[in-house]
Image 1 (cartoon, rainbow, N blue to C red):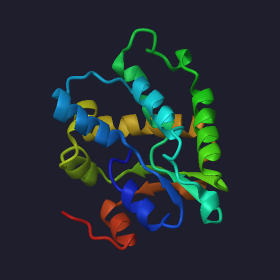
Image 2: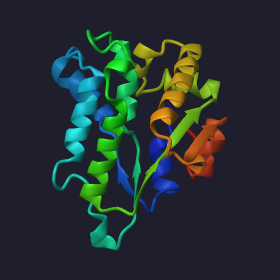
Image 3: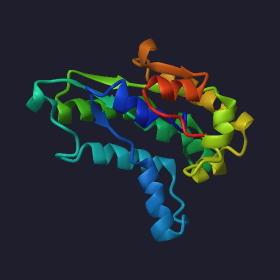
Image 4: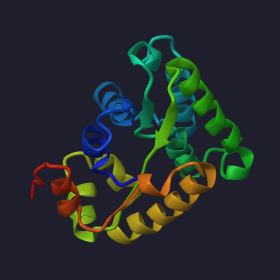
Length: 198
């Protein structure tokens, strides 16, 4: 949900972990290139596609071949599920109509089965830098999809609070140490040894 920083954080602080990267941006890029951004994807489909992809033989690394290790997830299945009611799909207007707990459990089962990892690390980033949200998250080069859902900073922060509550409810195993509240995007990026681009 932070809209920035996830990739940089994973490559630095969690560099020794096996990583499960998100394919959401690539999905929307292909939708734009080949369908003119008109395929009307819904997030329920993205959640299903995510679970199917994770279970493909060879898609995830086999930790046992490298002496074990942890797997860190950039974007879990609950990211997609959270957005489903926004689409106003008949029958999916409410979370009550979805088996969320079961999908989260299935995701963990698939990752553990395919990777033979020691543990799964789930990370939650919370962006509270309003200037960064306005200038980068909602108006940066990759902001088109976000801008369509979050037209302004207040809406973004409001939805982010809902997202954080939702994520923690269905992912109670997110450790306090793996929840990153970013007050200053510049300080956060620079603490990772990277350069913040104005």
